[in-house]
Amino acid sequence: MSGAAVQAGSGVAPVEAPALGETLAVLLARDLADGEKAIIGTNSDIQLAACNLARLMQAPRLWWVSGPGGMVNPTRDHLLSTADFENIESAEAWMDLPDMIDFIDWQIHFFDFAILSALQVDRHGNINTVLVGEPAKPRVRGPGTVGISALCGLARRFYVVLTRHDRSAFRPRVDFICGAGHLEGGDSRLQAGLPPGGPKLVLSPLGVFDFEPRSKAMRVRSLSPGVTLEQVRDATAFDLLVEGTPPVSAQPTPHELALLRGHVDVRRTLARKFP
Image 1: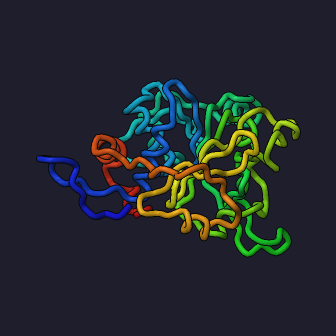
Image 2 (image 1 turned 90 degrees about the vertical axis):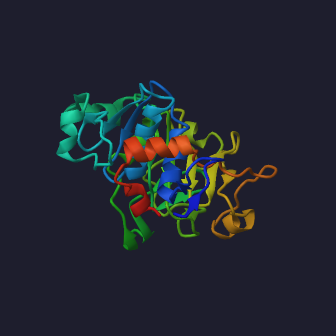
């Protein structure tokens, strides 16, 4: 996932290899379906790029709303904070705060998915954006829960995107559950009274991970090019499930990169922030 040039094909000019942020955005975009409804938070360059790229490919009627601003599907050729007022002029609609709160906090499965980052994620997909360490004296403070608790509890599914993969981020148990995944695994989420849902995929620089249907434990779905299972195991503080030999994650195609760089992220924000 470096910036080196690679050959796109015989007789075709070299295409710059995707940066980490570009790769994560493409992998996410492929999993989003036409007609779905989503919500995107403030610090969400990868999430925003994924949704807008999906709208250019297989999901032209995908509907996303700015969590902090209420703007629906603002159309830009570059990445702009979802809280920025400039989104208003190109948005299809603008929802006020009471409506946003009603959708986020009370409507079961109104949103088909949310895409979230985290300080920590654990083996059952619970996420932590609050603190690291003891609650009375944390070593690190995060941005807090914001609407994450409601989104993880009420959306049909959610995705977790981490731009680092190490034992401090992939924990056996998060230090503070602010977003409920599959809780203790198995049917514990339903037993706790939450509706069906939870995390579908976790994406990191080392690979893509899903959850085994019965145990709801995190499982290796695919590995990034050049990454070995030993590297992933060394960087993860719990035992990942592995079934057979995981394939290599399908990398962005020249067509996907052309759409991303030519229509979604012309300023190459993803490459600068997440090389």
